[in-house]
Length: 362
Image 1 (cartoon, one colour):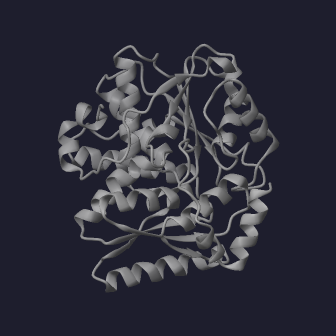
Image 2 (cartoon, one colour):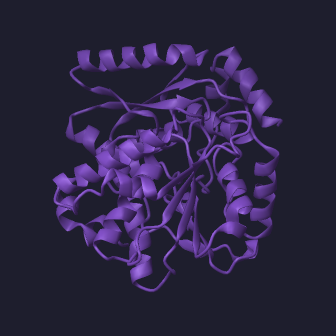
């Protein structure tokens, strides 16, 4: 298995605490069944056998950092069907940390309901808030209690959207650059992915810029990153993505990596779109359903209505106008979810049980 960060930026890798949670590099498969020979997918859905998806990469750096700081329990934050919360609960115990989750409601859907059932079953301290309005106070309270416990409880930013977390996705960009350098992939001119918490998009922007500066793979410049909003502005505002990308690049430079790109250089490689968000976060769309069916018919990776289906809908709509190879970022975990324990679900608040019932019959 290749550690792209160590292979390309060994000085940085030596100075960043990490734990190995995933199976790297993730595969890059053809999506020619969708009508283009130069269409490929980065299979982040296969990142780990226990629970995959794009959340595993930032957990490698974040969980290692928490262990280094002497933490005992980490709280993920997000919506009731959060992939981040489930990934944290599954992988934290692999490094000796207890897990918790502070979650606010979202529209019910099958994938979200299955995530919450699995999360309730893995033994995490799950706090299901009745409204998003209570989320800031709950997160602040958990952080305060953690400090009172001498830092043994820590609260992770949504999606691990910090420079340290984004290093995981920077590493994924270096994997793509290595594949291009070794002749296993034509250099993508476009990379299409959903953007929810900004961590993946920002890490890829910084990573592709670093690879291009080093002349690795992207000798004609980094690809254009198409970030398809699945959460609304301002959470996914351009300035948030670009700001995190710049801070990540600055951290890499500080640790011995290449110089940071200019803000203008980062901005030139980002395109965001809200056209396929629909009625908001977690709400399925007809275009997303059509994209899910098209991917299934073409033998592509499994999509979910909250994230990857909306990015896939954007891909199918814009593909005719995009010149050069395209790489679709597959973000939803493909391995089976952890088993459900009915007694754990039965102990959930009544409002959560009603929400689960709605989602599972959707």
